[in-house]
Length: 198
Image (cartoon, rainbow, N blue to C red; front, top):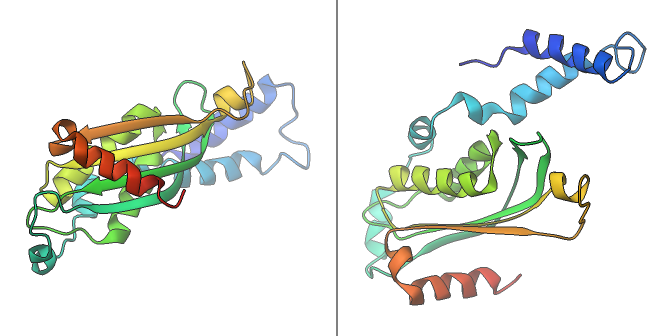
């Protein structure tokens, strides 16, 4: 479903009035239109299912798969920077970094596709836990590999700027699928490699 920018503009104008502002004053007169354009961009992922995202970014390199001969050979892309918005307060999740790892089984995904998957999943109203789960599911579909791990670190404006206002807290979530769930040595290796240059 396409994002309805006209409806967004209408509701942002109403929100400004509810806040006690004058949406016709010079600094705010274009704000509803600007917010609608911004929302169209930052919430692009809402318009696509996980299956659709997997199809969008499924370009793989079958010819390169013979490089991975061991069941423990991993592809790891770390420090993927992205952002998202918490569905509870519409607050920014920021300073987000994802590490995505998978074990190829006949397909090697282009590295930029992994970054695009993370970016698209973040462009939804989200929970950090669901982001990891969505990325893992899409990676499984795009690579035909059950063996996927996702580690996400983030700060949440709903904690740092309101309520408890704890400005230094960082939330870490892990999502593991396939062999990553059962092979502790493999997970230890992944964590060590992730932290190597942190």
